[in-house]
Every structure is written in C-alpha cells, then in structure tokens.
Length: 466
Image 1 (cartoon, one colour):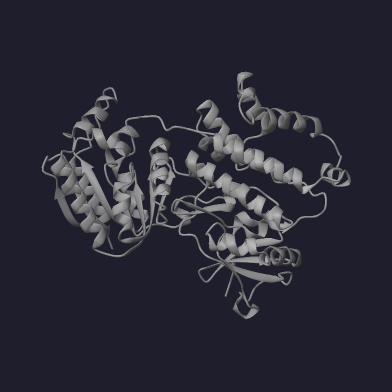
Image 2 (cartoon, rainbow, N blue to C red):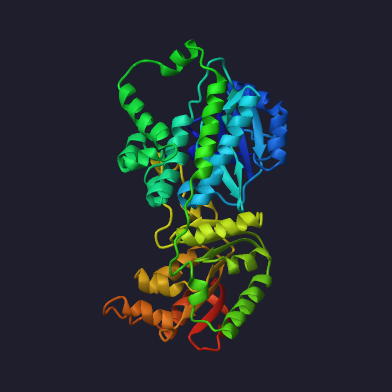
C-alpha cells in the first residue's frame, strides 16, 4: 500500500498524518510513540474516546501498515475518518466557541494525568454533524516538571481573539481567519479594542497584557520556557489559566441579527400549497436513491437538509449568511444531530487553498464532492445578485459529477423582480426559462421537470450527461 502524506501535518514531525487505501493513518516517531502510550494508558483517554470527544484510534500491526514507510517510523495509528473536513473560517460563532471549550476540556483532563496538549489549533477539531471531535491525538505529550502551556498564544490567536472580535465588536471572525492561517495577533486585537473594551472580561489579561509582553520579548534571545522551568513553574498555574479561559469563553455571546435571510422562510413567495408540493418533489427525489454525501447549497433554515439526511449518510449544509448558519447550528446541536454539518460559505466565493504552498488547507472541492447537490431557491441569487452567468454556474455544478436537484425561479417570480430592480437597469436579458433549460440540458440529462402551481418556480431533477 502506498501512503499519501497529508500536506497540513508537516509541522509536527513526531506525528505525521498519511492516507492509505482509504484509511487515515498517523506515523509516530519514537518520541511520539512514547507520548501516545502515556496518553493511551490513562482512563481519561478511554473515556474521551467513548464520549466521542476524541477521534476513535487504534494501534496497527506493522503487517497492516503501508509498505513504503520511512525507517524512522516507530508505530502507526489508524483513525476513524470524519465524514467531511471543514475549517474554522467556515464555522459559525457557536461552532468556534464549542470547539474552544472542547480544547480546554481536553487540556484540563490531560493535566490531571500529568500530560499536556502541546498545541491549541482549531484545525485539530472536526465535526460529526453538530458534534465537535478532537482528531490530533499526537498533541498529547508527557508533562515535564515546570513545563508551561506553550499552546496558550495559539489558543488566543485562533480561538479567543476571533470570538472576542465578534462578541465585543460585532465583526465576523471568518474573514480574519481565512486571511491568515495563524489567526489574529495579540497587538492586532489590542488595536481593535477601545479603552472601554479593556474592562470587558478577558480583554485586559489575554489581549492588552499579552500584546505588551509580545512587544517586550519580540527581539530577545532569552529562552522564556527554560526560565519558567527553572523558576519552578507549576501545572496548577496552567490549570488556573484554563479555568479562567473557560469562564471567559462561556460568557462570550453573539446573537445572530435578523435579516432577510433569517426571516426568509416567513417571507418567501410560495403559498402553502406550493411549499408543500416543493417539499414532496424534493423528498421523492432524495428517497429515489441512497446517497453517501449530499450538499445543500443555500440551505437557509435547513428544512431540505433534514429531508436529505433521512436518505443520505451525511449532509453538508452551506449558506453564505453566518446568522442563518448559526441558528441552524444551534438547532442541530440541541437535536444532537450527527449527520448534518452546517458551514458558513458563499458558494460564489468559496474557501480557497491556503497555507504553505497553498496545500495546508484544501479547497471545498478537494475535500470531497457530493453525489447529490441541492440548489433550491439559489440560482437567481447567483445569477442576478452576484452576476455569475448561468452557464458558468452550471459548469461548476457539472464539475461535481453529481446529480442535481435545482430550482429555477422565472423572471415573473416576485423575488426575481426585486433582485432585477435592485441592479439599476441591468436587466439580465439572458435570465429566462428556455435559456436555463437549454444550458442545463447541455450539461445534464434532465430526468424530471416539475412546475409549481403558481407558475413562477420550476424544479429539475438531473444527472450528469455522459
């Protein structure tokens, strides 16, 4: 078996991730194996895996490992594979907050076993639906006497500061994390906070003082970690900091604002009969086959994502509106849903490749494509609001090699008329049903066409053309 290295795992040479024969494997060095054995021997490790908070992991026999491993590999672990990889800049406020609390819970549990989690990256957290799971068991290591928590700065930059930015200033964190893989620097957050903000919980300690210390030691050659060890730094200090951070993060709140999208279900142009008919058509198409992965693009309140989840192994629910996604996440969290993953993503401006050589973080399509794509009440927003030619959008859909269930609102639809009016004279003369059907038919085989009773919305079930 040939192994393919995960490009984003190069930062920890003691715990590299590779893919082989459909499996996710972790290659441990001799030091990494010793640390993992120390973690695996604890009752805490068994409990965390049993509770679903840490990814399921097993030690492989060498005979079951790939043949082409480097000689320095001391052991190979095999992990459960998460259904779909996502990144923090695609999460909602509540998702990042819950991932942060999970990170701190694992650190606190590790300290009780004389272990520590050496880094604090949200990229080490993935999701089973609305349930976060920690995937980097290689982060656990033995706690040396006097050892500080070196992941504190990373935790602030990638968890705490983004959450503070949105909770205290009302500024979405997603563009900031998408703009820099490493997160928000202490001085950057300090610059964004007013004097009044310094009185807010956690800002003075974790941002103002942190930025000040950063400036003081920026050009020093002193080994701060070694100095802390010599001074008798105790794990109780780390535990106390973890407790303070937990209290701070639990109190951070962001209420999704009302918008045209959060109230879309109540203001849509469908009457009750058309809405029921649409749901029947969607339900029938979804149940016609078994699907491994469904994308619901423009999911809004997730009603069709839930229909899809009844017949699919997993559903990724995408919407450009973070408030809509946050509300959906909170609902799915309450329901303890493990089959629908909500992501805040504008399909017209999807997540790019990021990091070293553009390979640490993959594009949306590189992480796995669906075998069914739902595009309901979406085309007019892509084509009119965002000026994407319909042919270009259908080309993108065709590149997924998936079936599609797509809805076309005609130019007479009230929502379409409002969107066209807002374009100030740009009438989108190519936006009509005959043109759409021609373009769709050139790329897909249309199996079914259903016009709703009002006559302004048409649903198409189509498969990729041969």
